[in-house]
Amino acid sequence: MSDDKKNTWHGIPREDVPWIPTVDAEGCIGCQLCYVTCGRGVYEMHDGVAVAAAPMECAVGCSTCANICPTAAISFPTLDAVWKLERERQIFRTVKKEALRKHEREDAKKARETAQKAVEHVPTRAKVELAGEFGDKRFLVRLEELIEKKPFDIVKLRLEVPTLKGARQKAPSFMSFEVTSEQQEPIAPFLEDVKNLVHDAGLVLVAATPVA
Ligand code: SF4
Ligand code: SF4
Image 1 (cartoon, rainbow, N blue to C red):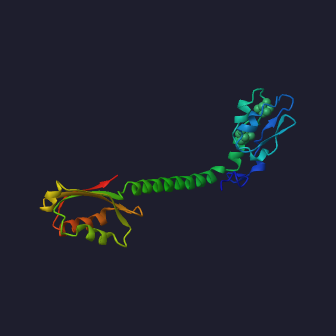
Image 2: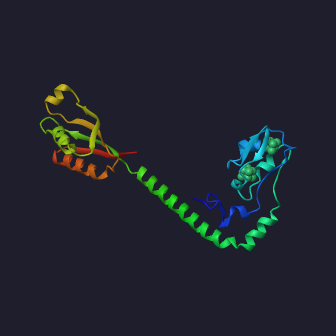
Image 3: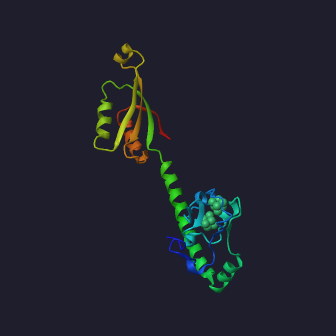
């Protein structure tokens, strides 16, 4: 929670800080611009006139509502009183600590974002292409055994045989599929297992490419 939210301003009780808006009820035309603009909920509208109902919620140094009021009906004290208070209460020691905490938060946020991006760029899917004679090698059965009870699956499986007669005569065929992690884990370690299986089955690995 920031100092402002705890109703202090850099360690100074908010009520000691002379920065509150004053509305000249005579000059207010009830346009409600200040009411909808102020993000601190300082204003209420009473009988068509703006009232600074929660003045201590006003952000010290902010004068947005006064700047945009079409009739210049809102005024603030001069900044001299705030500057004087800054010096007298020596707020800069507190500000220094607050800035340090803010830097730490920002650095941690950047580190989190960097780590998140790194994780997002780790491939969790890979395309495998292989060639060879698949007939009596039980390759698909062994592939199924490999993924069994593991958080991986095979998708987009395609087997291309040159001709039906050619397949019967054990002519080389082409197979492709994608290996995907069901839990968005990096695919690289499991891809090595698939490559070993291809090798053990006496097939030719044409490509094993991570898919972005
Ligand atoms: S912006 Fe000015 S004129 Fe409009 S409601 Fe607020 S005080 Fe009144
Ligand atoms: S100066 Fe800013 S924070 Fe204060 S009342 Fe106006 S708009 Fe709200």
